[in-house]
Length: 500
Image (tube, rainbow, N blue to C red; front, side):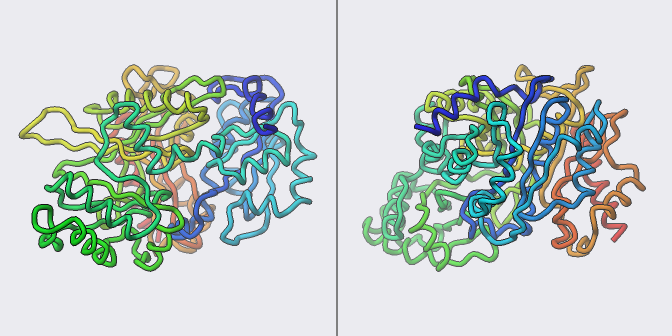
């Protein structure tokens, strides 16, 4: 009840980031990845992903807005300076005076929010910086931890009520797709043990006897790392019509030990434990020679209004193209308005359920040139959090001061110039290890690839703290055409390769 009372304040506190706001406002940014920590450890340098929300510093262009940004480890001053210098139309020194940085000095494998809650003295320091009548909190994803932090600080959380988290799971997503009449692959209910998973997998195969592969998904995964693929060809002897249901389920259960995991370090023993802890579903794997993975992003504001923000074509990797590596904006014109329309319908359904803030919907698009001129679309899952497509769009808005047009799915500057980008969290090479953020700037400025505010094209960076230790970097390359954005992306990679 107390949390709900706090949340009612958002209706008067919240303003669209696009709006120039001259009111007193304080925003506490806690970029905690409050997800299953053992799943997150599959991602190289994941503890640096707290840097991905640094594009939120764009809010400092409002002259009476103050930001408090909290991280596990202190941010390097040159990284902070980089983002402040990107701010258009305001001296970086003026913005810096309205930015407070706090760190827990704790690199352990815990969510940042939990680290904060374990440090009452640090919390008290943050509380003293807040005017609770004008402050709210922003996070990467909302869980009971974020709710507890909001209650302790007595400020509202601009995020999902954790009681609604089910709608962002694999099982909850499928239920919403069915309610909205959005096409999605055949699949199973959520189960929590291996025998039941084998049983529902056998049921799925019996409903779809022509299936070649079935994907097994942990109910909570990140970037596709929680997916595994079951190849049905070795099970031909127990295919539908060849054996009883019991025999089929028994053989499937044994075959689980040979699942093809998307994460190279995953094992069946560990994955089985996650099935018991998180639950899992079986889902038909969509086959196709011409196949893409687009997504649509939307926002539900505190007034319950749904706004579509973007569409993307996702760049996927891993053994079977299940792991998120990056994206390009916008999605292909052959389907972007259709996935936007489905994304809007899903957003309205979520809003009716009480959801708030950003959400994303992932799709699979398959093209059959000899059958149907239209792309065949299947919704795959809903993400009720910020994601890998959030910060590139934030970068574009910060650097170009433009807006998304739902009419055609393009992004335009104030002068009407359409903009495009290619982005990745995974520009990674072993030989990049040891590069400092200042080295990166030397390389990129020397080759004149940094974002040029006059021409409105160039590269912007994130995850710079990850570079020295892991040889890994985030990049958003912005161009006046998809081809130019792609070219800048490859020029940056080539520049780093030459320098190292």
